[in-house]
Length: 406
Image 1 (cartoon, rainbow, N blue to C red):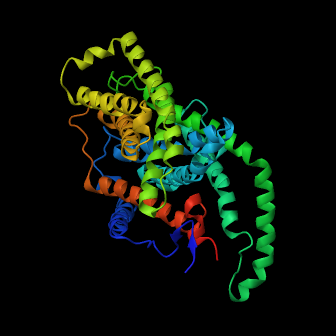
Image 2 (cartoon, rainbow, N blue to C red):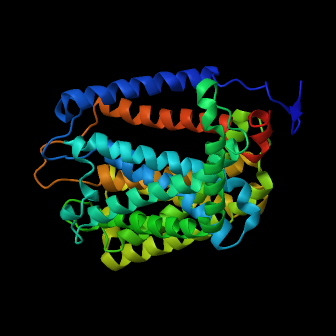
């Protein structure tokens, strides 16, 4: 029985007890989505005229976009800054971003009352250049397209020279090989342009998500409302993008029984404290200039959530990841990355859900069980698809030989 990189290719099963549980959650989420699409938002959610959005926007979209930032941050560092030693983690980051943004688009469609009109932004007659939401929509659509193009070399590598359609379809083998070689030649010469375009588009819509809430000062709590909200969103996206790559890499290594990329990840994590220091400095300076710190004097849901966000999500990962000794230990490295992710996730929830308060609301929004199941189901689907692609495509370099060679 052949071994590849010291790992038996039959050692790993796709369905483990944990994966089966995730599959059940995915099925529950898909059922909830179908129920929402058939019976409408009113029947499936606790949304109304006062709260037109909830966790589907706060978590599935706003948080999902931020957590999928690993694609553009890793591409920026590895290819634009020419830090080639990080190439080994670029493909997994690209896959995470691809799946993340794909399901962000699905989340937006589910949240739309008339979801069947989601194609309207691509019609020039319906463009509105003064709309922050229009910029977000267009940038996300274009970036999703760029991500699929960036992923094409991985698909080509998987099938080039191995096309073998069965039966009558075998007449297409030669033609398909030619097409794959043409695409491979084109992408090898132009992929840098798509990488640059992806970084630019990501920076645009990451910041524009902040602009969406910067234009509603009467509805957003002063602890988070600021004219520089778009800048804060962009800075936090850079830090969480790096953290997500580390988080995903450690989890994937443990799940797939492949070696940890500790030397690379430890070096990669050095950027997080620097970015978080810049973010923290900008946040404190902004609060002092606007006197918004006065809202921390009283114990409220908003002030408690703000303290949790800053202490656990910003200060703690700075302290952990600033230590070279701790960065070299997988548990601490994982903890620092997880806390960074928690901080940005809570920040987006604070801005879009907890800190959002309509002027005439009579009660606070609480998500329905259907809303929770949809969110959990979408996350579960991302995990399952990630596992599928890793099993069948050359994503993780240490895992390649197990399934891609004859």
